[in-house]
View 1 (cartoon, rainbow, N blue to C red):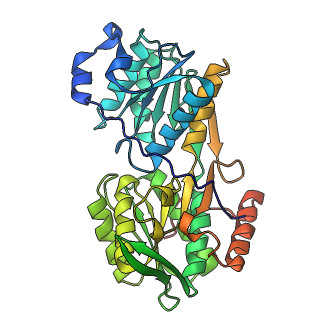
View 2: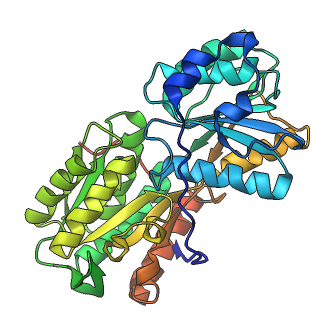
View 3: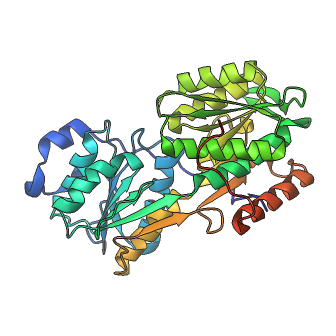
Length: 374
């Protein structure tokens, strides 16, 4: 299917709380010892391998990008017997600090340092040179270094799929009975408006790929649909996300797709207040959001798979340093997933159309752009 269904076991939301200031001040370079006790994580001393996790800004609990990475390392702990420790940088300057502290640690010795997010590339370029014997993993950017395995995603392909869905639903009468904030509501589209929206976090080339794919997918359904785009300037400002999406809904948008991290929860709240629809990102957000009845689908980006595979390679002594892996629709790196509350409600002709566009992307018959239309 173009949109897939996933097992509906609601995940436990975990946020490891770390006193980052104490950690930074209390540990330096090669003298760093006992690091496992300073960080949130599994910290199993008897494990065969140890992994240090440096998350992207916004931290755990974003119900999206970082939480997907966390799910991947939790799976590795369960299935591979590794131990891991988490760090959640509060600012750009902390990326290099945490990377180097993991790399210089001898108790434990970290077999892999995982760097989540393209923003870590600059710091990692320096640390990869400084610690040539340390294995690093970088998500969302490529780095040409023998000790770095890079994983990138074709987010524009998955975004095309959810854009296609948004366009198909926006041009027909579609409704769903559910609830928001304890009140029963109808969540619907209005074919008379033919308007949808996109809310990004910070404006950069990566998030432009989400926007570009979404717009292309919408216009694949109907070239006359108006797509409104705006950026919040933050990954962790739900209020701003709610304000932007609210304006879009008030101006006629049926559906708003976000690629904005924790800011996106505000998009769901705006949809809930107005009885409109939303599309989540990175994880199946219908499984974790209190506004799940607004989430008709999510563009799932399998950072969990990348983290698990890189860890498995290290455990099996098959670490792929110096390589860049690109993951898209064809290899399960990204996918569009129906919201838990919408299973069985999407019209079959819509699902069939999504099947066709997915196959066309995989076959190369549809070339999905990586930059938004002018």
